[in-house]
Amino acid sequence: MSPRALVRIARAPRGLGLARAWVSGEIEVSGDVLHLADSEKTLASPTSLAQILITSARTARALGFEEFKAAGSTAVEYRALRPGRHSVKRDLAEVDFHYGLSPRFYRHLLGPSLTYSGAMFEPGFTLEQAQARKHETICRKLELDASSKVLDIGCGWGSFLLTAAEKCGSAGVGFTASRAQQEESAKRLADHPRMSTQYGDYRTLLPRQSGITAVASIGMYEHVGEKNSPEFFRLVRSRLRPGQRYLNQAILRRDTGARRLRTNSFTQRFIFPNGQLLSLSQQLRDVERAGFRVLSVESFGQHYATTITHWIRNLQSAWDTVVDLEGEERARAWLMYLAGSYRRFRDGSIDVAQVLSEAR
Image (tube, rainbow, N blue to C red; front, side, top):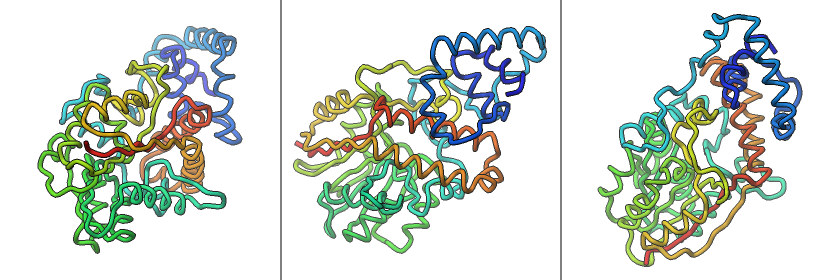
């Protein structure tokens, strides 16, 4: 650890300074990053924190004002932070920060399935087999067949739509708020003329859709926000006739967990600006009030933890290439993000669930 790392901690002591030091390469860790993630609670104990802060304050004082002033934000942080506000223009910009990296970066991270959501594993499954099982499970729950026209809100790189086309013969359309994702998904779906993707915000695109028989949103609800959750489900409901199905897969926080969005949290600054995890109880309430009947809820947070171990291995095995594509600071930020997410899925402080409902 360099002295600059301790100055960063003194300047932003609620974890952001430590994150900046790691991202900037001023802290090096030997050994398994997942083992370090499992040790986070020990590192965050009152005794450890007090020792770190005392040492950091002394180091900052010794190095002087200019060093303290220089140990600020990094080049890869998101700047325009007012968490909780969700205008169309702002959401497009923030989604682009998260998903606008090189498609090659995501291919290295996610593997051939190019799927950025929790997979469903069985013993001996590869990551690609587990992602395929997840997509096929969603197709089954939505009862897709050749007569279906499925809408995928937040379609990413088109992986679910590919499965719906190839396994069920379905038609469909996908939305993404990332231009990079829309361009890549269009290429991947080029051999399936009954499938298409569109760039834009769900609030603009949803009212324009017709002929939809089923809807899925897989890892998109985290971008909606607490205030917009009721309206999001009402818009989805408006595209469906009674008896037609909707499946929402989303990461969830505990109902007793923190609701407030902290501007200076690591995830807000480096990875997922304005992202918000909501509780299952709120999601179910908003879904039912929008005019749906809940059919089933399936949670599989431990499978998401396993998914992340594969992503970390992918990232580390392609480290030099990823650094060439996006820079070392960005690569280090993603490694920290994945390790922290792994621990939270492991300890149950966050979960992931598929909520299947039908329009009343």
